[in-house]
Image 1 (cartoon, rainbow, N blue to C red):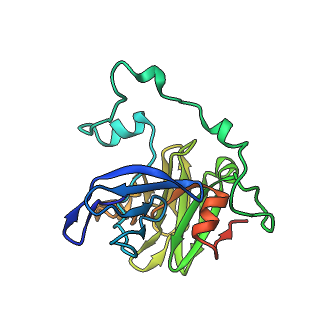
Image 2: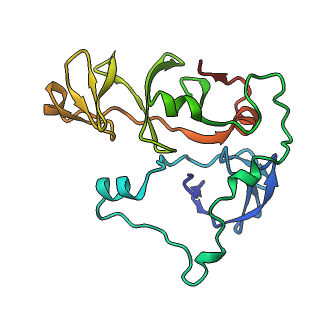
Length: 227
């Protein structure tokens, strides 16, 4: 997700095509073309500019309404919901890719959660996250925790508090507990019980992108794979 105001201009985007099997957007105001996955302008008068990323999450409607009871939900156009293709990914999975990943350990359309922080990038296989819903890692000297809530509901946090990395483990389905203080942390990354709760501490969120391996690697050529 990207902020569409840049250099004092608020841009209006439309889908213009596909570039390396990734959406290409064109803005009405300057006619420039923008790469969806990176937010970068690749052609036109604004070439080289980059949109500011807006933090976002992929959540179930149940989780969203619990955390944001006054939140709004974008629905399909009334009367045309039957025309929306809901299960399109199995067909896409069979298509060839334009990026060669034969020298890597993953098939091109393996689904990964991509994280870029601290000057480094790493891909986490969806199958690994399904079997290991809480992963502690360090990327670019930034200690992180990946916490899967099932399916594609995934959040990533910088697990440093007061400059120290927390050692976190599941306490129950809804909470993690840190070994240092015994505090409980909820899925928002906030302490809800224990010493850190009294200070209303929340771990900073780290952006994460669900993507096909070939696409993630194309835009993050030095990426590693979590093993």
